[in-house]
Image 1 (cartoon, rainbow, N blue to C red):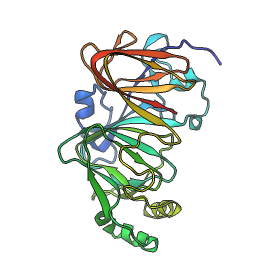
Image 2: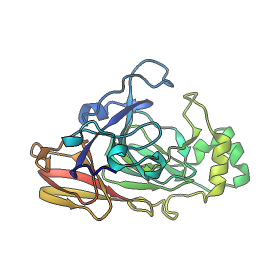
Image 3: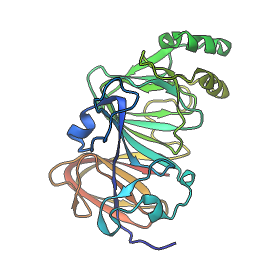
Length: 295
């Protein structure tokens, strides 16, 4: 494998149109718009729902946007031949309207609430228990919507989402989503949008796991680490050095100022970097907030 130069790699965001997308990512985080509207949308309006910030999958791969390796795919830089070998993904998500209620069979996610309009809520587990033998009927009849636990959220909060936890981001929330590299989603309720549901699959998924409720196990607000990855929030007034362990680090800036910089280069809100193993990054500024992820 060829040895490429070690330096913090700025990752080019991959914009993805969604029927529920909003306008915050392009207006305030300098994210590019998708070329086309979501095929499931009822009109041709382009709504930017999410940007893939760190991804190596069969469908998409992050591109390096700075330095000697500008334009290179991240999998080539890392010498990864099989996308499934890369363990994590990171996205920005802008919920212009509430996302579908869903569950994942084999994926742990973590939400960081970057912005939330007053009164904004997430769906986070259930508000009561039920007999699993009745689950299929509850899902098919749409009565599951009366069993959903809704929780008001504020900027700066973390929410861990284990496999089997029913969840959805609500309208008016902008979140950074950290997750395992697995994009299997089973939709169980979609607020009348008419998209396909995955009721039978969801019943099997929920039956394979405990049905988590808020406060159960790792479904606890504020948790920001699990056995698959760990996320930390940093505030900088002056200078901070991000030093790597033997593992790499992902970094994304959620608040910047005119003097914000990474290794002497301008750092703006929404910028994301892959810091290779053995590399360090100097962050400076008067009022900078950023998140780091290790795995």
